[in-house]
Length: 135
Image 1 (cartoon, rainbow, N blue to C red):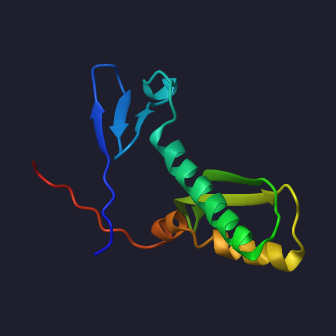
Image 2: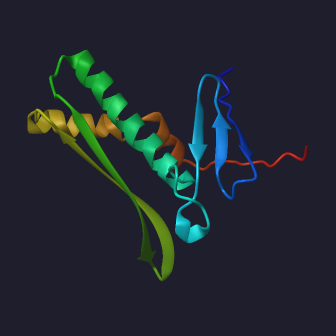
C-alpha cells in the first residue's frame, strides 16, 4: 500500500491565521487583508502553487543530475489565472521554467516533459475524490 500523507491544522482565535502540522514541520497559513486576514503568511492558494513550483523544479533537477546535465539554478514561475472558456470562468495554471545554464533545445524539451510529470502536476491533472468525515 502506498504511503498516506497527513497534515493537521488548527484555526485559532486570530482571524484566519492557521497553524498546520506535518510529520516533522509546522507552517502557518493566512489570508490577505482584503479577505479579512492579516497577510502574515502565504494563503492556501499560494501554498498550492508553491508545491507545484517546487515539485516541478526538484523533478527536473533530479533528472538533469541523473543525466549529468549542468543546468545551474532552475527558476519556476507559476501563475493561477481565471480565464473565460466557452462562456465559463475556469482556473488555469501557467508554469514557466528557466535555467541558469541553458541546455540545448532537445534537453530543454525533455526537461520540460519530465517537469510536467512531477507528482503534484499529476495530482492536479487527475480527478480527485474528496471525502469529508464526520468526527
